[in-house]
Length: 332
Image 1 (spheres, rainbow, N blue to C red):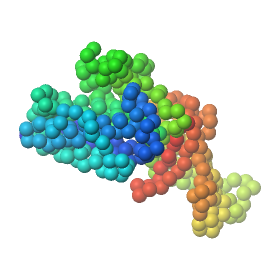
Image 2 (image 1 turned 180 degrees about the horizontal axis):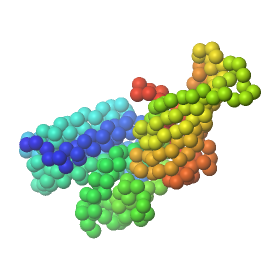
Image 3 (image 1 turned 45 degrees about the vertical axis):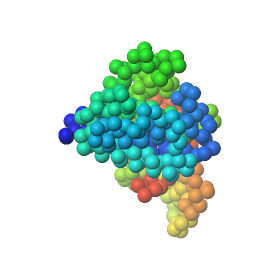
Image 4 (image 1 turned 180 degrees about the vertical axis):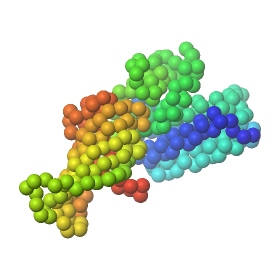
């Protein structure tokens, strides 16, 4: 049976969230296994085992022709100790689950033992579950967690009907609701609704944000008194495309002419919104010797944040990978 349009949307959002989860899992180190998480009563290793164990159960249940999961509990499951192996398990389970849903599995009930839930409802519950546990693990280990804003909104629409008194409160599956402002981004509202404090931070761990960008244009500028080739000044225009969506103006000053031995320092004002809809602007400064990554630096200029970025402080270094350049911003 073909998917309905709402189910297709949920499947697409879940695929994106699970891809982000695999990235977070790949960044968890053994030294963090016994650190606390925002999910009360669970340390990183316990929550990691819980999340991966249930994902395997859900995937097998949706893939089963009769919609029957092989187990009714993830108790006793242990995820691979190595980060790469655990991340690979997330990706494999995600592929199985999403392929089954695209094949129409959400049109039939999902059975856990003698209990059944409509498949489309189960899919929405899984999306909500992994939005929360992905954030739990990312916050506990100092990694970015920027799921699609549409995923947060969908779960925010779904969750209230599930949070009855039997399931939410002291010593229940979902903790007591945390009050957040009505104007807070949808993801922060979802966190509060699910019994989590959006302001939870792991002590001593900087929170990370990956902000990808492209350079749209650059314009050389003449500065009186700077003649010859000993220094150059340019103004860049950038567009931020992920992690932060927006734009930046960059004042770029370079020194040296020899390929591989040049140096630069840049100051830029970034204006936009994060994936969870926090809006504002902030100034960062970065630079270093072209030939020596050990000299590369970058930081947020304290006191320059506006709007929801007010109070931002920490590092902001430019890194390159096969997708291009990005800022790794670590909020202290």
